[in-house]
Length: 243
Image (cartoon, rainbow, N blue to C red; front, top):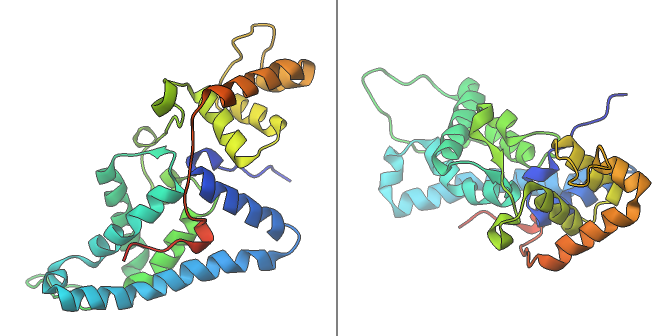
């Protein structure tokens, strides 16, 4: 059976911790998948009521494309979950809008060529929104793949750079420390990203950990000690969209 590829380096530390715990529990009992799925579906279905409240308070929303209003609501959630993805806000917004239009096409009525009808509901977009939110929380899917973005549009943010000018190596160590990954998993992630040990005695981090685990532990300890990284946030299962 082929090994599943995960895009854990794209996720913020808190959301990743919640998703990893959910997926581990679900490996023994699929019922553990239900809470997050239910939460996301509920959020998507509640968007219609929120739109109607906003529309009544501000009639200008009737002349705003539905996908623009939806994206304005969900971008904070997307950026919170995929916190390590470095992507221009305009590209992210455009990608999310294209996704919604593409996935909602079958539910939308054709627009007259000579008329721009008022937007009185976002109901046709709800099925696509459910699918999108589920994909955003899927560790097996990259944001680039979900939104069909070009390879050079998306990079992984170095989470340690804002603290001490750190490197991708430090960012992966910190992500692993925060996520309580095994040392073996951290070593494999470093190798998967094409990073090489500074110590030329080792061809890979996995080899370093296997032959000289003390060297690996020391490196991990120093990175943790020198970092002032601190992440806080609401567990993904309890998050709400901006109101």
